[in-house]
Length: 498
Ligand code: FAD
Image (cartoon, rainbow, N blue to C red; front, side, top):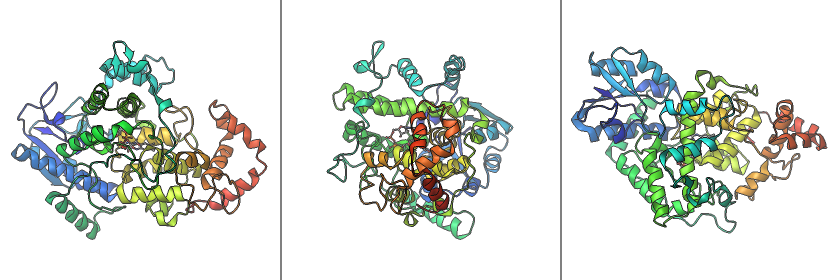
């Protein structure tokens, strides 16, 4: 029989093909309560994963044995009863260790990504120890898969159309004028999931954080296809220009909201980039938006997946900046109401209410705050993993340890991603109504991001002085007349909500 993990739910995991199960091979799914006991997940995430697994089981009918068990091991023993089991390569090191250690289980190659791991290792090893660059990888994937290519050249003559993107938000509007994203309708399975989660919480068996309002993300292949179609038809055209902008009244803007569907395995990345390219070739979306979207999936998503495996087991313990402070309770509890800084309050509330916010709030509001405060990168990684509907070990480690917390000392990015309030002010409408002023470093209205930025550079000036990309602001530190005051103010702030 063939085992499907809860993030292997699309037809490309259950169908035949090289190293796949036979067409009507019996299937096995295990709903292991231990997963929910291990971490305090966002309730909307627990809901989504359980709903997606149970919907898939309902679709597969008699072909699947669906076991609810304490642990994976127990579920497997009960369902397989000594029969040989195959499984596609799981998405976490922990799950890989588990399946490799179980008798009678054969592990096949991963599905759900564009590049086989061995091909990536060949590409990366070919760099002879030089720094790996996402941009080089992305060109290699585009060439290899003929994505947005005209012959041997990138479509439109350039690989990267960033300079047409990354605009600040339009100033005179509270929302982008773009078609609404797809939102699913709940059904009886969702009712049953919500009932079970209530019961588990009441019994004190598990504990969650965040709100479990109506389910906002697809739980079935049909819903995920609808979400993809809606995005490509109505929203892709405006994806590029405002990719990095933030509007308080419009958290989604033109983002696709497809990450949870991709990470549950409901959609395959090849179909997402294929549909986007088709829209451009048919003249339905401009190249800057289509290239931006293709780069997110064929560049970033793929790169992050590959680095998770390539960087090895120890990567998760990286802590190049020596940050050890624990996460405060208000952060762990997603207590947005305790926060005065409008940007952080708004974004934390988005996470509390939906388990999602787009990449810039993740990087430049949430991650940046954690970095400036010196919080333990492993705890920050765990927090992102628990609190986001699309969070999984593989996607969290490079994105948080590497990209957001610079804990790997620059293996993934060339500089720490953090900024003062001026960046937030330029890229959002969040600073206008705020009690703090992005230009103030000290005093009653000192912006916590501006003060935090200088205090961060100051603490790590020895390490960062040699980094070309931040050497200039590090040199400016000595010209700040109020640096001593900034240090004192930041010490006093401690881990209180800003
Ligand atoms: P869009 O903006 O529409 O982008 C399209 C797709 O590109 C996404 O659906 C996603 O599949 C892919 N993508 C883009 N960037 C990345 C990336 N860096 N890593 C992986 N996939 C990417 N993404 C997750 O899927 N899960 C996470 O747990 C996650 N955690 C993140 C934590 C931090 C600190 C940062 C900076 C980024 C994180 N990302 C994560 C990447 C990105 O923020 C989300 O994929 C994206 O915001 C999801 O919304 P969307 O589907 O509307 O994305």
